[in-house]
Image 1 (cartoon, rainbow, N blue to C red):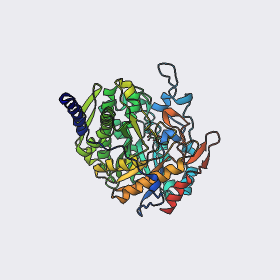
Image 2 (cartoon, rainbow, N blue to C red):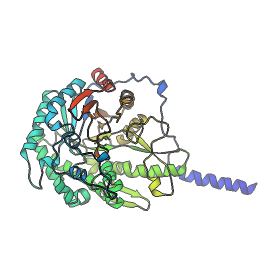
Image 3 (tube, rainbow, N blue to C red):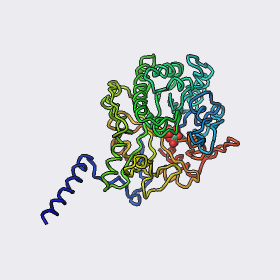
Image 4 (cartoon, rainbow, N blue to C red):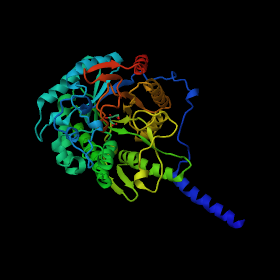
Length: 464
Ligand code: GCO
């Protein structure tokens, strides 16, 4: 009997100690939606309502950049890099059709447009600036302002010129100066009219895809390099911030970085290994960002794979706001086989979107709460759903915007929201089948049609 008790006590101990270490015993948060009135939302008077896009995904007419190059490559088994062997091509021809797309924004009632500028169009070769590309963006900014829509520019959204890629891009710290130089070329002519600037879009997503999973260019699978690139991208943000702030108009500009606070949860709450694994991955993906921008301490580690620490002391002083992208969470299911353990899994029991994640509005509240430790105004720079059949978009919009409204009501400083995306576009390695658009795009005719589900967004924007 005594021995049994001892064994039980021992087992309880080895369970409790790591549980205490893990420091969360709470089950993954879920709300009782039957008890919630989705119309019970309110937004502050000056709340920014917008839509978002990115140059390579919508513009067409691409010059030589990492993605244009990638779509012509095959992997080691001879498979195309982009799903179904698709090419980005003219995409939404937004480069030419932007005046008509601004009308679509007006129709929605939004007052902000987050878009990115194409570095490879602005600097097709190293050291050479194409002033006609700058003129193009300048005209676009004027058209937006004339329509009562505030422009928000992203400087790097997963895409850069091939000459920069060939130099090793953000793999090398010394290349950061190229990015700083480019930023200056677009900031100086536009900052009299553009207030909001996002330096880099989702560095952690980019780095995991490009240097860990290998499904984004340059398709490397090297955890140590991934950690290095991420550090360099955070450093690049700080350098761009400091350099742009020094120019005339710099103090007026609102400069931030964009972080996707995708959550990593245990597949089974009760399973210690699932919790340990999800916590470790979460620390790398989200914790490395929070540590950098709160304390200036960058840390990216995963047992046996990588362990990198660096000081970026000015990082906490390099944000006028933080851009938050949020879509969903994924579940970690522990396995001693690392490849298996690190596979992305959908959280069980939730509605599946067309991407490999579910609909999880509760996570939006969590994401806002987590990023609020930065103590900066939060602007939602992306949120949306891939839903080709348009059978969940309306519900998605209502529930996610309920979560944001609840966060604001609870005191979190959320200043604006941008839906991803204005229209269907090129979803990177997944090609054209992931339909995120409020407007459906017929890529043969370039006709845009407002989806039924999107009318929820139009309704909420107009009412608030
Ligand atoms: C990203 C990007 C966007 C995507 C969007 C939908 O998160 O990958 O910022 O370019 O298209 O998030 O997946």
